[in-house]
Length: 104
Image 1 (cartoon, rainbow, N blue to C red):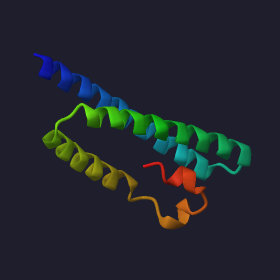
Image 2: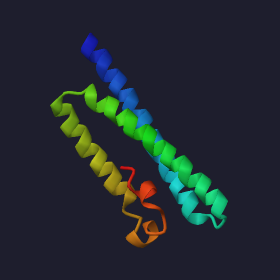
Image 3: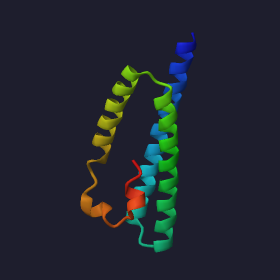
Image 4: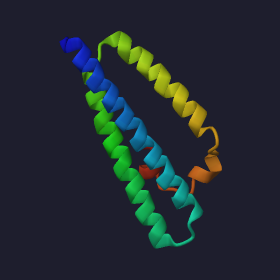
């Protein structure tokens, strides 16, 4: 029973993490499209905030899983990110500071 509760809690954390990753991606895209420097900085800071949230939540997820679940989840996350981030090129990311682009 406890294991089933733990799996459910981890599943909810994964869903939240995915939602926050999507939100971060949305802010990064908006920052790339805006021409106002102040608005761009605000959007980049919001994206950085979501990146920190994702990292903290991912740490909780990792600490509550066993090694087999970790391996499967890391593979799924890598595949999802590969499918979703292939649109970006290195040229687009060079205009952003390192502390924003290296959040993963």
